[in-house]
Image (cartoon, rainbow, N blue to C red; front, top):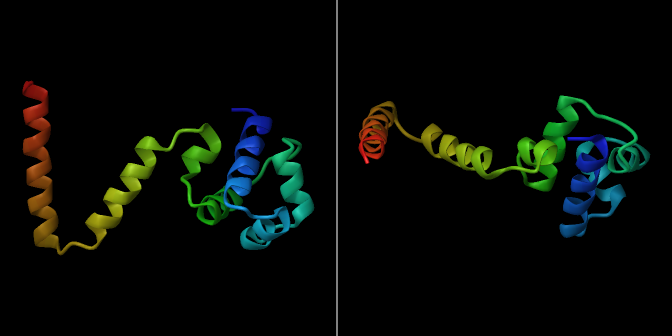
Amino acid sequence: MSRKEIGARIRELREIQNYTRECLAEKVNISSKFLYEIEAGKKGFSAAILCRLSQALSVSCDYIMLGDETNSRGNEKLICVLEKLEPKQTGRIQNILKILYEMCDAI
């Protein structure tokens, strides 16, 4: 993906959420000028800024960078659920998933 495509996606997400450039820049802890340069495709940004953008815009880093969030967003939700389980429950879930995987493989 090019900087322009990534910047356009960030701008679109910002506008969908009705954030001004100043508001989003404040949430991400960068200047509004730097955010403008990112959105215009003039500047790149660090992984730390990417993480803060994804949190502020409620999307995955994959979506910002690639325009694809289906797999990563689903994985993030699954990981959040698994982190809340007790170790015994996690083992049971792993066994169930293994059985389901084998069933899908057999079809």
